[in-house]
Length: 71
Length: 245
Image 1 (cartoon, each protein chain N blue to C red):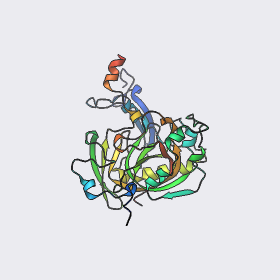
Image 2 (image 1 turned 30 degrees about the horizontal axis):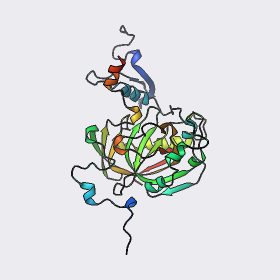
Image 3 (image 1 turned 90 degrees about the vertical axis):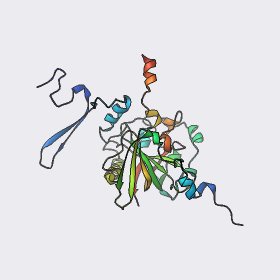
Image 4 (image 1 turned 30 degrees about the vertical axis):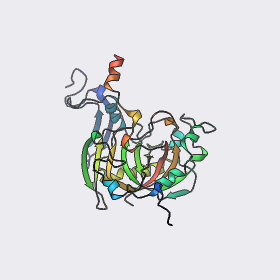
């Protein structure tokens, strides 16, 4: 009997990739999106650049409540 | 005529200036670019964020200190090739073990590569997101082919440059120049302090040296919340980068 494909390397099904409401892995949270623009690469493929307000956690700006505490 | 604060009409107040650089136009005229912290009043400053963004435009020189010797060096090893990021990650010594490394990995400036970091790798991967750091590194978040499960991510860095006398200067500059030359992939702009994401992720080949980011052994891991690497191993520095190979 053929072994099932390794879970670690399996291909995501079309349903998994396109489930309504699901944010695909590596896609920014909609609430973090600041702007979007698209471009065509030198190889002719169209991409979208999604600019977000996501940062590395240690670069997070101080929160307003932190300011209040300092006062 | 100078104003009360010492600035001339149309020029920024001296205390707002964070950088100056000059260039010569095609017509031979010398022009100075003055980077300031001034912004439209409707744009509320996000305090440190705005300041760090301004600092980040200072140039290409590496501005950090943690493990600087390791970050600005290239491992002495043959290149190992990986078709799937997952396989590269599986080949790494686990973070927990590296954190207890003997001798302990220092985060001081002169902390050089340890034996586990003496590896060069080439990985066929995908660019999901990128940002620029205040130390002039570009953080690239690379991941597996988006059709594969489970998703895995890793930070790979285009390093700020070492001093010109460094034996690694030319190689790191070539990689940085190659990245910056890819403006066609960034809508003619490089990423800023906040992460840009790419949809769909861009296929990319990355070569570089492995690096364990001991400075983040405690606390939150680097990376944006939406594409967070599961480990603090990085490729740092990147020595070659090819978009859409």
